[in-house]
Image (cartoon, rainbow, N blue to C red):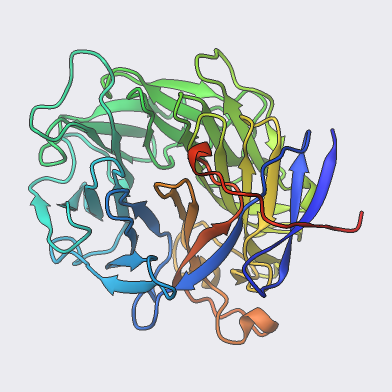
Length: 444
């Protein structure tokens, strides 16, 4: 395979970042990103954030801890506003946000015992409507995900004027269940089983729904392989679809994005700690060979895959990565972590990977996924990625390296709400392609 290296500016006047392509170089210009952090006291406890984009208004929603923050990127300096729901901001065991970008409805879920508190907003958090019961009967007790999209053809469909399906899924260590709402999230049907311990480990990633209504929930360990747990009947039944050449290392959730024509993109952490992308073409019966999207940049360990797709041949795979090998959860681990984004414009035949934070590390040292009060637990378990109406990628993450840490000081073990937003380069919708940005060839 041909490896091509370039440099692309992160923002005007900012440091340059290495870009890697695997396969045949394409005419697309790799993206570059500008970061925006919430002004204190907002967003200072922002581990495992969810991010949503309302395509009707352009506003971005960021959920972590007990706060829901609205971010307006329409001005030169983004504005962050606290729009937290009084209904859900009373407990923060597992905060989750989902925005259906087509309908503009945002859902916030906070795990509470065997169910969750839930509220929804149709005006980007200006007002909130309580969902009487935030899960379905028999739903599991941990690591919930909320998602939605069009209904799949079949017996089940909308029962109210809200046209899209809403799902609530959660795990119980030895199994996982999923509930469907046919009423825009106000009532959930009884939960159905997605898998049991003989099929997959309990923990799963975040649900995505394709344009044809197929629902996907990623799992990092189904017989030692990454998998997409899939429903084509609006959650009545589920099938485990493993990636044959995949492997697994620890509990970092894989992530799925689905293109406009149904092509499925999965990003996962392999047994060697590297970042792998697998693609299942629309209508295909199997997965293409997985690609190590960080190999040419020397990335040895990754965490928090976050995948989103646009046109059927375009997808983005964000992750935290470090060029330091070894056990990244060990207390003595000395790696420096950055936010990387890999992008394909040709259905996974080639990937261009950029360091989105080249001069501003996200973390120094270990990233702990085992729960409890470990010092390296500050980032918690995942991060989120979405696209706006023009196909620009936005990644919501917690920044654990602030104050003097970026310039070489000690890690602060913070969790500051931050969004990396694509500001140049080719996006995920061809309809909005602009003239390619200038690039400089890196030394070979």
